[in-house]
Amino acid sequence: MPEPVLSVDDLTIRFHLKRGTLTAVDGVSFQIHKGETFGLVGESGSGKTVTARSLMRLIPTPPGEIASGRVMFEGASIYDMSREQIRDIRGRKIAMVFQEPMSALNPVFTVGSQIGDVLRTNLAMSRSEARARTIELMGLVGIPSPGSRIDSYVHEFSGGMRQRVMLAMALSCNPSFLIADEPTTALDVTIQATILALISSMIERFEMSLLFITHNLGVVAHACDTIAVMYASHLVEMGTKAEIFVNPQHPYTIGLLNSIPKLEVQQKYLSPIEGSVCNMLDPPGGCKFHPRCAHAMAICREAVPRFREITPSHYSACHLNDQP
Image (cartoon, rainbow, N blue to C red; front, side, top):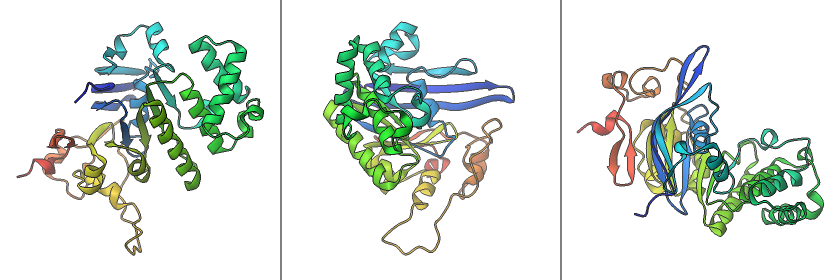
């Protein structure tokens, strides 16, 4: 197995708030290799976005704190880099498509000027060079008539077109690693499929690795090679797409899959996961999923389950996996 492009080892992130300390990410470890599409799945509030932002050192400190762990990118430690070094990596080597383009893009500047600023800052292009490259990038991501739309403002674009602008900005410096934080949220299914196909084609064209964050299992089934399931700051299961969908091991993963409508079966009702995500300022002891788990045992309330190997590429953190 070649060396991973990105390696996260025992990452723990806390936020020190007035109401108490919140552990948003707790002991998370995973690796992403060159050309791999890695899906990070879970409900809102599970820690997916905090994990992604920490890879680019975008956690505000204070109140945030990298309590422990290490992030290695192309053999270098992200957390040991100076401000200048990490600034050189952002955009040039690691780029991010943020969840909500209306808040990520500035409404008072044209979309062309915002893409062009990235090019001028990171690649030292002149204004004319940046404008020409911006038109090229907008055409590359499927924005029609880019020469005339380059001077449009964010509010003049639809949701799908704004997401294309975000993708053009992320791809502007030819990064080797792309983070896509729920890029299809709030888009209708037709536009979702278009954006997914566009991202897949860009990954293949530029030979990038991708961290894809979503709560939509249908999306990861279409787009990802490896899938990690996150719940209440912990990774609870990780494996290949086939292993997660065909042989899920954790009750939370099984619950997520059971809640998906099945076209081949007549269903009167869906099978939801009862309850809601725990209060992360006062989480339950042991396994954080046990208050919602139909298979909870006494040990689940007392001990945090270890991340156990099911196969060389499949892991699950559940006490059920420790039973003979």
